[in-house]
Every structure is written in structure tokens, then in C-alpha cells.
Length: 384
Image (cartoon, rainbow, N blue to C red):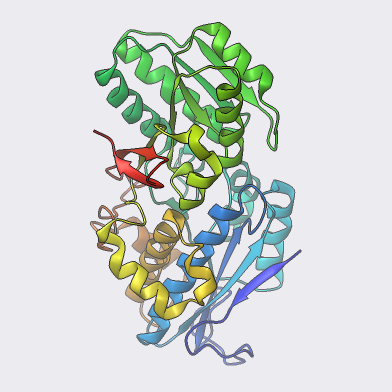
């Protein structure tokens, strides 16, 4: 297991031997240990590693400003290679060896469900910036929170937008065979029923699949003129290129997973005109200028190019968690933090819509926007 251990701000390399007032693990008189699990390489690498960068920026900023009631945040983030079995191993290490107090990143839909019993057993405060799979948040769990709109609502919003522009579209979907893919299908079914339509195609593919010739041929044969894709960017790129190869040109719609700078090159010219729904501004948006300034202050130059939307959400997630810790004072407990996260209302980061939770509300409902890939310009641009 490869581990990334970020020591930020004024954190000491040696663990404090002082006894904290709180009885929960991961808290001493001088520090709070915050864990995370994310893929650093492979298909999920651009998403997961970027999230760790946002965590690091937030921790560095918090520690520079005195920490949380005088305690610095120490990050311990494990690489799970986007494999659920490794996620479980990583979580066990974070609990048994690193004795984390809270969790700030979980890499995927299936991955989160695999470790959910461990999170619930320990009542571990968790705010996940990487995944908005509904199965993580419904039914609500006392200690598990997420930032962003769920995939169902994202698909609903995108399909409504495109249908208003082109009402005669025939919709289908090609999605990964997991919770996040199922969520996209549920969103598509919901919005099509509202529009008085039915889907012409619903296909699922295996995790890690690379050949999509059969799926694309099936989509063309179904008569679908618009497709929702639901996997990772590398898989979407393969689908786009396969469609281009056989002269199949439906309107493609994707979620925020593809709203990262690397996707422009990954998709190539075949990505031109693909619609993307997201609740985070593009990295070129002036709204993110203060965040990028913080990044340049606290990250090595090599990491700046690896920032993306997940960095922004991960930054916000740790800021919300730290504010909840701050509100607990010196008597820091997991229960207190969970209660304070639930009370969070209109938390402003200045980077996206305000963040709110509430009784039984574990996933924020973030206002979003429709973007379009302009391959020639190499940018995500607002949809017209």
C-alpha cells in the first residue's frame, strides 16, 4: 500500500505524546489527524490526486492561521488505486495505525459503501468531495456528508437543458456497472418520464473496460441521438473515439467527472461539443483566482498543473470540517463535530455556491451550470 502523508504548516514529524482532553482517537493537545483515501494513478488518478491537493491547501492555510483552537491538522492520505478491496485495507490502516479523528476523502461509489460500516462504527466525521452517489447519503448517516449535487439531479438538469434546445432528441445511456452508473440511469428515467419520453438504450459496462465497440454499435442501432455517459474520463474518451470511427454522431452529455483540464486533450477533437453539467466553475474562471493564489503559495510548482475541480471541493470540505471542529472548542469529540457539520448553513468559500446541510440532509444541493467543450480553444465554455 502506498501512502501519502502530508505534514503541513507547523506540524511536527513526531506524534505528540501529550494527552488530549478528548477521548476520541486522533486528537492530542497539539494536533488533529485527518485521513483520506483516493486513487493517485490510473483512470481515477486525475480526480483523486487533485482532491488531495485541495486538502493540502486547506490544511496549510488553516495551520498557518493558528490551526483549530491551537491544534494543527496532520493529513494522512492513502492511495487505493481505485480498487474497493484496497479502500478497505487503507481504511483499516487509517483507523488502526494512524488513529485518525476524521476522514476527508473517499475515492468512489463502491469504495465508500465498502468502508461505510467502519465509518459508522467509529462515528468518524466524513465529508467526501469526490463522490455524490445517492447511496452514500440516503438514508442519511450521522457522520457521512458530501458536497455537491447527486448524479440523478445532475442528469435531470442536463437533459432538461438539452431537451429544451432540441425536443426531438432520442435519449440513451452507457454507464459503468456500479452505484454511480445506476444513479445516472435513475436520473435519466426520472427526467424522461417527466418529459413524456422513454430511453431507447440503457447499457452498462465493466469497471476498467477499454473496448466499447459493441456498446457503440448497439447505441447506433437503437436510434439514440443523445447519450448520457457514466464512467471515468478515459472510458468516455474511448466511447467518443469509437463513435467517431463508425460515423455515429449523437449528442453526448456527461457529468462533472469530465470537467477537468486533462479531459480536453484526452477527448481530442472527438470531444468538441460534448455537454458537461457541473456545480464548480472552470479552473479558468476568475472566481477561482483566489484559490489558485493559495495553491501557488502552498503547493510545489509541479502540483499546480494537476489542480482541477476536485481540488476546489476538497478544499471546501476540509474548511467546513475544520469550522465544525473549531465550534467544539478544546473538548473535541467526533459526535460534536458531526452535530456541528449538520448545523452548517450557507458556509461561504467564495469559490462556488454556499454550503448547507441540515437535519437529515447529508448531501448539499449546489446550483450548477451547463458547459460545453470547445476543443479548438482547449476550454470548457458556458453553453449558449
